[in-house]
Image (cartoon, rainbow, N blue to C red):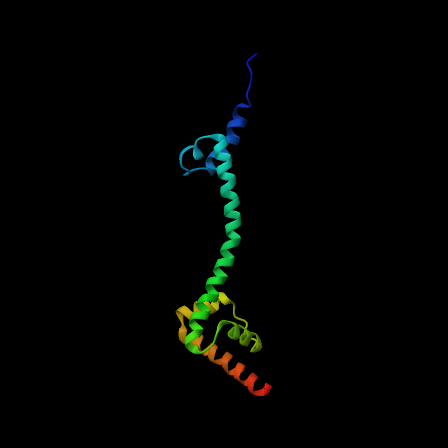
Length: 125
């Protein structure tokens, strides 16, 4: 009797890996062992970078907010502190969008925060 080497099931398993390696260069999309390593590494980096992306976006929003605050006479840390004191709950993402798209509205929020900070200084002394 002839020897069977897994047949259709084996090819189906390899095909799943091959489908995930579409577009890879050279042996990384042709050779079964290389495909597995390349796809697993791609999955690991994409998993890691989905988390890293969130970190980088928050840092970008902070930079944009800070840049918009400088001409208004505030710095980022004082502004965030003032927002918390005034109980203004706006996410950094929305603040960054406001700073870019509607600088006048952002200036109104910054002025309110600045007033609150100045009133706090006056009452403390």
